[in-house]
Amino acid sequence: MKTTFLISALIAGSTAVAALAHGGATGIVKNRMDAMSNMGKVIKAVSPMMQGTAAYNADSVKRAAAFFAQHSGEAMTRMFPEGSGGKPSEARETIWSDWETFAGLAAQLGVAAQGLAVAADNGLMGDAAGTMSSDSMMGGGSTMMGSGSGMMGGGMMGGRMTVEQIGAMPADGAFAMVTQTCSACHTKFRLESK
Image 1 (cartoon, helix red, strand yellow):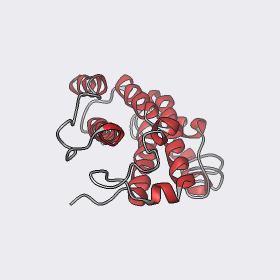
Image 2 (tube, rainbow, N blue to C red; image 1 turned 90 degrees about the vertical axis):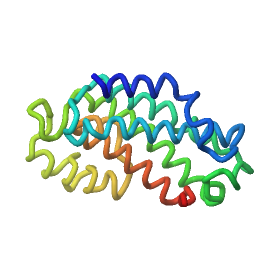
Image 3 (cartoon, one colour; image 1 turned 180 degrees about the vertical axis):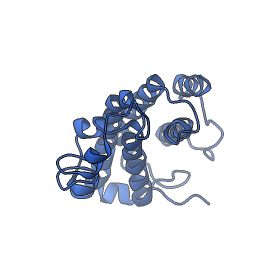
């Protein structure tokens, strides 16, 4: 219940948070820094559920997924107009020189978020409510480790996974897809914090 309230509060107050935390940023730079900060807070709020250290709540996961989806794709790329780099922004100039990769990651965040919303009802991998068996996790076809279009068998590493593929995963696997997309983007396009 505490996690559900926290996620709801973060999402409801997302525009009023982090006003002083961004070193004098204003306008679009402040807006995107606030959005990124709020996505990080939602990730931190959901993580204990995914790790099994807090009670799992599918509705909270769906709300978090909707929040991530709302900040993905074109909504994300619109927050990075050309010329909006430099201090106090934490965006690397490579965003604009490698726009195709950046836009692709922004779109993939949307796919992963939509997949997480579908996967929320699957429960966690170790739960009895989870729908994937160990056979489907390690087998062929469109599974996580298989030789088909799964996370390691071609989807994540050799191409992009679909909403349906992510939605068939346990929620913690789908959540990992969201966080891995965020991490990939930060690694390539965000300046290191000091």
